[in-house]
Image (tube, rainbow, N blue to C red; front, side, top):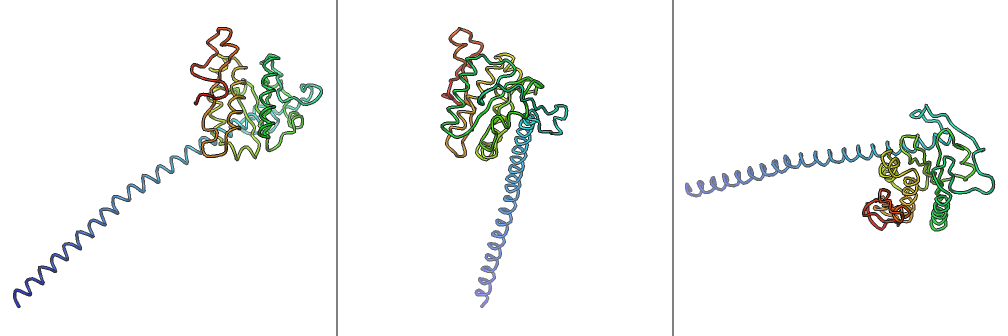
Amino acid sequence: RIEHDTSTRSRARETAMTTSMMTCSMRCARARAVPARERRRAATRAQAKDDEEVAKRWLTSTAASLVVLATPFAAHARLEGVNNPNLLPPGPAVPVLDVAGYLTPGDVKRLTNEVTSLERDTGVKLRVLAQAYPQTPGLAVKDYWNVDDDTVVFVADPGLGNILNFSVGGNLDLEVPPSFWTRLANKYGTKFYWSDKGEEASISAAVNAIDQCLREEPGRTKCSKIAEYVDFDAAASGDASNVNPGGGLFGLFGN
């Protein structure tokens, strides 16, 4: 009986120790899991903050272009709305308007062909207004171009801070991520870029990039890259300063 009692007590102690070790392991695992959850939550909060900042920058850029179309925004209160249809050309509406003299007739023809082809192939109306505020038709272009939810109004005006400004229709707002417009403006719209390359280069590069973006198939990677642009006229004339090394027209090379 003594041996039996001793053996029973020994097994009881072993069982208690095993249970204690299992409990400790579970507690340690939970303790390790807490920091991991906190790290994931912190990463999620950081990503949400980044997304919010991107959206804010895009809204600021869009607001700037809409002010030019005579829509008041507090952030741009210094800009007064303009509605001057006298600056619109007579006859049928044209998709590319240059009231500031940034583009040559050849540039206008080339850009017109590009945006016309884009509309024919995708149904998206890309409209280009090159201006120098306050010399702008402003609100008058909304009726002139019949701006709707499938329209992108691209306002090129160095006086707005960044030469590239966009007003994006509701249907396209759902299709193209807001960060695309911000990245496009940061790549080709800065004063450093257009001062060096010229206003025409910024306008042409932006139209090319938008064309490539809107032709991409829907999906998570749509418009994830800004198409490179090469001024082939400058390259042909030997002016390498207007050529982006390694780039290619029609987005043959990535961002």
